[in-house]
Image (cartoon, rainbow, N blue to C red):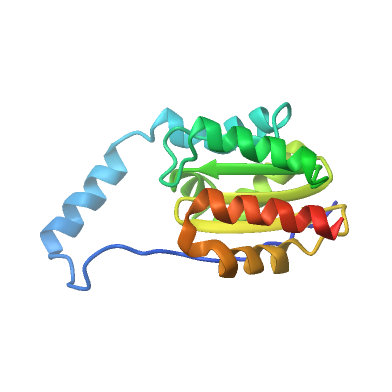
Length: 171
């Protein structure tokens, strides 16, 4: 079994530092226990893996940091032009993290396990960016850190495009 290595590169948290009133916490917990999980949350990782079998870039419409159609097309083109493939890029909603037990790295590993293909994997899952390699000699974690440092302030597309370029150079 091939091992997928990944790292949490960034995480943006929103919310109040004030404690939640006890009755609100209980109400939220009660709703969470009674409400059925959404069909979308149950299949985000399966949908991504299925799509990545035929397309190196998958963008879930519900993703918090979703790419536009033209950005996704430019990433696909860059993967080929830069010689970065095989590469699999998934931009997913935060619910993908939940589907993988609360860990975005586990979500990316799950996609890699499902695909069973060697390559470099990159995932923007909610507000987290993960990268790893399976069966290829690409230092994906280091390259992802470099891309985030260089282009993190410029948005998701800029970070991913930089990552693709760096992976292509590393090959």
